[in-house]
Image 1 (cartoon, one colour):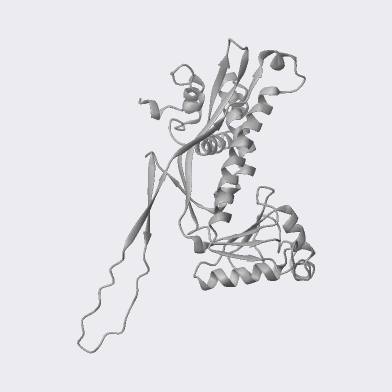
Image 2 (cartoon, rainbow, N blue to C red; image 1 turned 30 degrees about the vertical axis):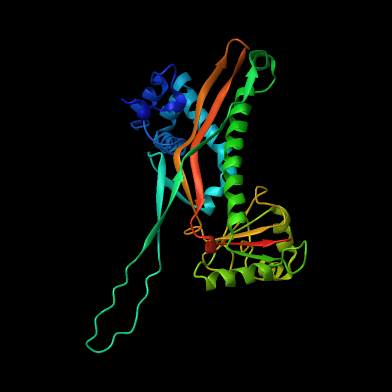
Length: 321
């Protein structure tokens, strides 16, 4: 088995983890490939299918149980901060770079009687996205692990996963705001109103890039909840007509995303199909870290990825909100 085929985040001294082999044999799943998300998903589905007695036996086996629980713990901590992936098209590839084709718009014409049918040559340009690496290495002393009255290692895993997800999402959101093809200031400085959002929906729609996501900070979400248009929608129509993560009533195909990672005083509207390409060369991975000289222990988190704006017209921002 080649180096890249191994489960890097649970291997020790270059050898495959016995915990992974034990899980594969017991659950009849293949965990030697794929990203952390895929591995966690396979584990979850396989364990959930087992009878209760067998499930408990698996979870309480020291190595196998620890591996499954660590993976689930890390992914559970990372998921809430990986909101940037909802604003983009995600591409996974084993190559060092990703070439994204961008097609020019085809055009039809009138044809005279007996005339030649015109050729519409679809011209392509390309954007190349090279994978970059991000990561962190939270390290703590062995004394801290031994003396703490709480689970220091669990806290370290959760914090590392959160930081990785937050960095990725912040980078994506920041670039989308910078590259937005349509930008307008809020009608009332310092307050986001539904009329501002409706105006941007119309602007982007006329560019054939109607937004499917409205992303706002909690402050701007609170502004919208105070808006009479939204209050009437919630009070007199449906209780779930305007909730974070859900669809917005009367705006087909559009949902609202609320997070503190969205820049304050800014509303971001995105057509996630066309706006940005996110290239994942290697998803979030974890490796053990130990520094005997300084008596430090911890985990190393890394990810190889990058992103690029593909169509600026698929991004709109409302500033000074």
